[in-house]
Length: 62
Image (cartoon, rainbow, N blue to C red; front, side, top):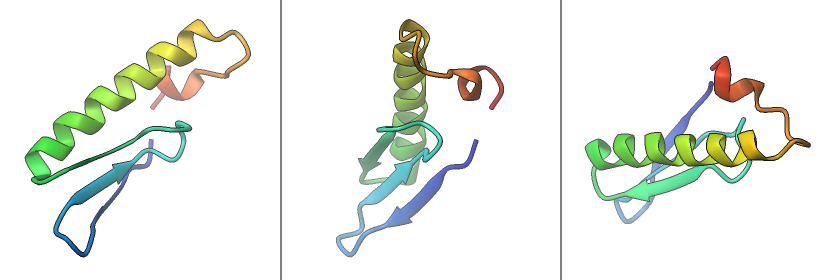
């Protein structure tokens, strides 16, 4: 699974997992960002697993 991480003009770190629609987060430190994107991925995959119309293979085969 690809992750995109960047730092904005205010120094805030932003992460997104483009393979998972709506999976993104931000934090003031890289350490916090890693924790938060992990949580976001888990939550999106949980929602995907409940939706029979979504292909959740990316969640089981990252």
